[in-house]
Image 1: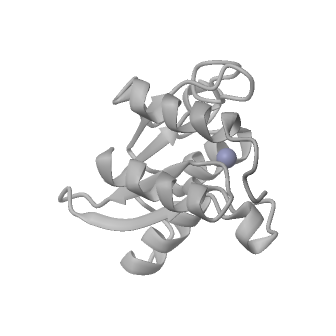
Image 2: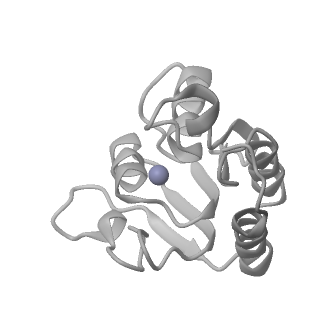
Length: 146
Ligand SMILES: [Zn+2]
C-alpha cells in the first residue's frame, strides 16, 4: 500500500485525483504500477487500477492475472471493479472507502456479486486514513491545475 500511495502522489503532482495502484504477482513481487492519469492523458478510462492491470498483463504476457493481488488506495469504481473481475485477480486490497462511487462494498459490491463467475477476495481499510487524507487534501487545495 505504501507503493500505491507513492503512485497516488504522482497523480496529484500531475493535477489528477490522487489514486494509485500496484499489482503483485503470485510470488508477491511488484509486477506493475499505475496512477490516475485522466487529466494527464485526457482518457476517461485511465484509472489507476485499469492502467496497473494492463501493465501487469503485459509484464506476464497473458490477460489472466490469476494468483495476482491488486492494491489500490481508493475503493474501485464500477469500471475498475469490472476490469478486476475480467482480469481474474485473486485479491483486491484497498485503502479508503468511496461511499459515493465505490463498487467493492460501499455503493455496490460488484467484485463479490455471486452472479459472476469470478469473485476476488476483498480486503479493505489498509492504511485507510493515509489514503483518505491524500484525497481530502487534494480537493481542499484551491489552485490545483486540473
Ligand atoms: Zn475506477
